[in-house]
Image (cartoon, rainbow, N blue to C red):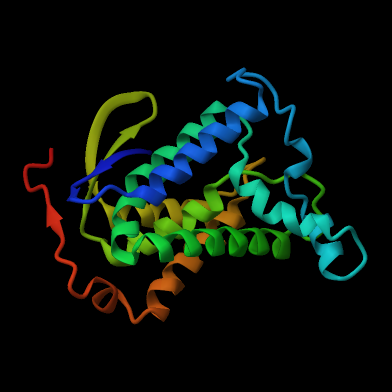
Length: 226
């Protein structure tokens, strides 16, 4: 399911969310020298390889591999990969950024991406397959949203059925999380997604839970949401 929007009304612009989307798009185009459907030509060596990260952590490899934990979360394999991630970030990032505040949101976003990479590396320490994409960090955004706004309504588009439907956030995100665990997909870093989601939930719990995070922040909803 492809999320299109939620029913939360936000009066302030999500500057960090928009900046992250802009950075990901800019880096994607730079990486391909403006050829949207072309191959990666500039930043290929900045993808993360779990075996190299594991070796660096154990003192037996090039420590530059640790840098790729950060760089890889701003790279994407193709235009579909990029657009899918950016749609999720746009839909769910707004509410989470508003709840956490821009500065904390930016720091936590990076933390969620690192935790996602660490989870993937822990599960697949010998993998030589390059890992890239913002989905681990975005998984953290989804985990936060899951605890903060479970009752919000989300408009989604089901592939090949081009009629939008509306579902509750807890249903959509719960199914997304279970899908990562139960239905691993070839070429997809499912455990990075799981790690990011869990890190996002843990962030909210460590901050005192939903009530503490949203204290003093009245949520406005669009009750005419289709």
